[in-house]
Image (cartoon, rainbow, N blue to C red; front, side, top):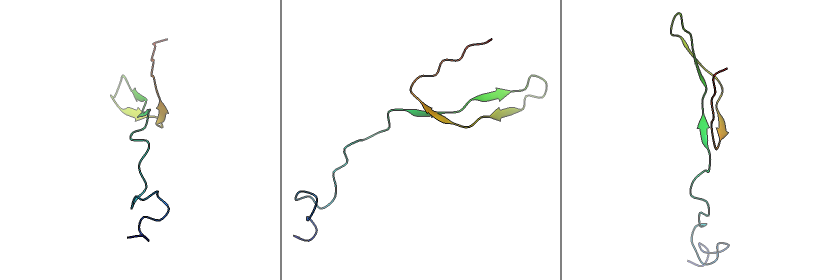
Length: 54
């Protein structure tokens, strides 16, 4: 047992510090008005998404 707990402070495995990511991956979907074809852009990590029509 001494070999298993070596290096992690008497625990057999490292303790997980962070449980979840703070941001979600977002995908921008562009839809064609004529044929209803949807194009998805590359996803990126954002905390807040604000979409406005021009």
